[in-house]
Each structure stands twice: as C-alpha cells, then as structure tokens.
Image (cartoon, rainbow, N blue to C red):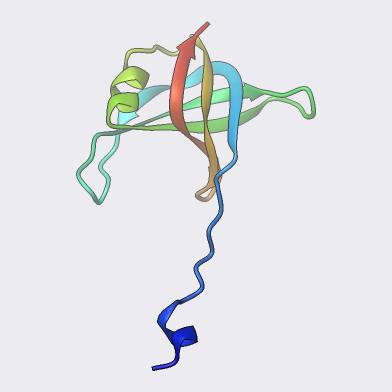
Length: 99
C-alpha cells in the first residue's frame, strides 16, 4: 500500500473566537438537538463599531445552556465564542457575562 494513500488530507482550521455585546431581544429557550445534549438559544441585538446593530442568535450547550437560561429579555450580555452560519449568523457561546 502506498504511504500517500494511508494519510488522508484533512482540512484543519482553528475557529475564530470573537466577543460581542448586545441586548437580549428574544428570551432564551430550550431547543431539541439531535444529540440529546442540553441546548438553549436566544437572540441579541449585537452592536458593532463597523456596522449597524443586527440580530444574532446565541447558542449555548451543556453548562453554557444553563448560564444562558439564567438571563432575561432586555438584559445586556457580552458573549465570547465562535461564529457560525446556520441560515443566519449565530455565535456558539464559550463564555457569557452579564453587563
């Protein structure tokens, strides 16, 4: 067997971590995922110095899901995590801080 066939090339990338702030416009709610892990999502009106405010879905898994559920509509949050595109922009939370 040729050694070049033994190692498949994988597309490795490190996700870009970003920090955003905004006010919760849609209260956190549990959603069912395929894996059965606790999952919560909320919508914030994200603020940026490069563009006007825009709606952004915040998704939390496991302990971040519990952390997100502790916040109410109208609260200001600062979220650190990785950005994703799932039919709209979303951020998967690694850290949530109430301001």
